Length: 267
Image 1 (spheres, rainbow, N blue to C red):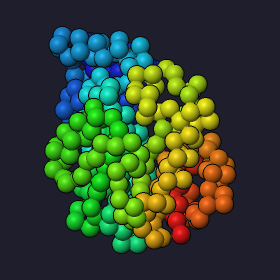
Image 2: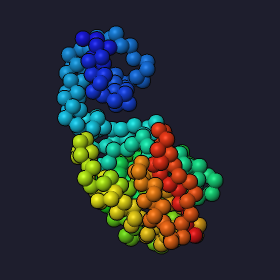
Image 3: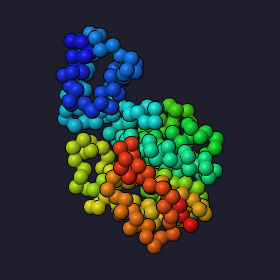
Image 4: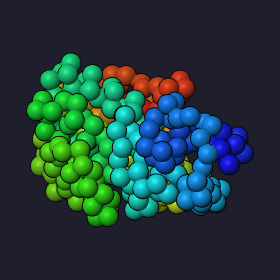
């Protein structure tokens, strides 16, 4: 069987992004430089078929490969760590712009998972920032530590639940991709990921609400909070910050035009 025949057979199974990432890792070259007329040897075909079978069951490709691509770099992941999403790249883009514009120094990546947000900020901004990354899941922090080593950056890892153990008024920016999926919506392939990284409670905003309420204690004067949110949660966020000393600096849209994040300034 040739590669193009295999691709044609399963073109409706894999989303385009997953297919590209799979073949990039199998053949160790960019998807667009692959020759689709190359024959597949038995070892390669067996491997692709094994991946296909598990993928059909709903297992995320990132867990099958042990890695995911984010912001142009690869990050190790396993079932104990949340899989980085394309939408979160928009938070990183906006954070970089905000940090440079306001000369922000001390950054907290709250609920870091595999460490992708904090690592990307450090790789790009280098000595301009001091990055702290926290997570309550020890297994996730082990993955984050591996990624920090792979990417050769200095990120300070802390195991804690939300803000426990941090000094007050110590951060210029807190950035987080928190759990925001409604409990009843965690199904399908999402069931393979750590529930605590997804479950935002009945309305999806239980953890977001805690972050919004406690963040002011840990921000410096006129500090910022960047949150990823669900595509339908903009009005809920507006309601949560009502009567609090937050100002919306910017609503962040994803690459499809949905509101998927917010930049809040406190004080």
